[in-house]
Image 1 (cartoon, rainbow, N blue to C red):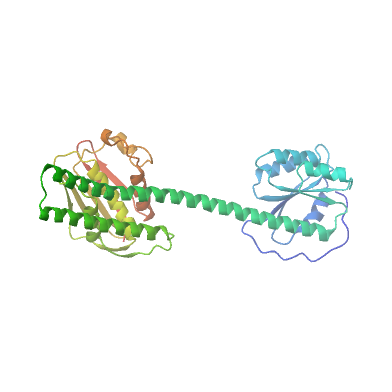
Image 2: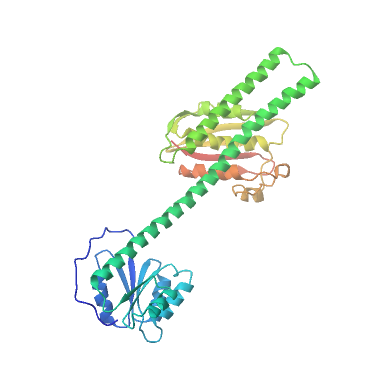
Length: 380
């Protein structure tokens, strides 16, 4: 790089960015680097200066924030064309914009060679300060748009993951009450085949079905409301834990040989009802599902721990080995009870996530043949 024209203009103001636009200046002469930096500095940009092709490659590979390279063509050892070729063949640097700066030739063939090697623009010496600033301003705006697109892509990826978890959550949480409804219908059907059903008996079963259908409809409405709102928008409400547990117990249709006892009194909490109901439903559905006793028993209670309420769900089921506990909250891994190998672990994974969102912890106390107690903290 040899010379600049004497024309000048005021440096345009630039809005301060959290991630400043970084320009790599490459020239084998220090004085040219200093002049070019002074020409382009608007108070918000950052500059990295390299005096050789090898040094330029080193900086480009190590720095992820470079948005533009001003690359001199005439340099010893490795010229600008060779540097550009290396940059464009490396996945880490191939998207960085390159402006070739040269005084060799303005012939069309020479300019085309620069574009073939990866340049996106071309400046001939002596540089016109107006044109140089204008072109760099354009590339800065393009870089800002590119960064915004990357952030949008990252946000979309996060939203997709949240949506995937939400789909699993809905599918899992609706499965238990639907299974209960189908089971009750099969029971009525089988009884009708084996013996006539009295009007009173039929009315009782229809009443149970209607009530279960109502609870299921309410649950679906709550989930739809939840899905339309961000975490910040989801409103808390006063929740009677006794009422919530009674509804959940009814909705799960525990078989007659399994009794669920709720220790009273239960607290009132100002919280997000849907999330807490999902936690209890996941724990209770598993306690029912895996119970292997002729007379199954599930006890629900709580302890006040200051800022948190510690809830516990204790069952007299088969318990778990250390190996089964190690797989308990891993997504898509069954916990090892052979008769339920189709279990995916989705519900338990969601349960852990919901409890940790509250700043609480989840613990399991169990041993083979000794049942299982699940404890979790829920913020008041």
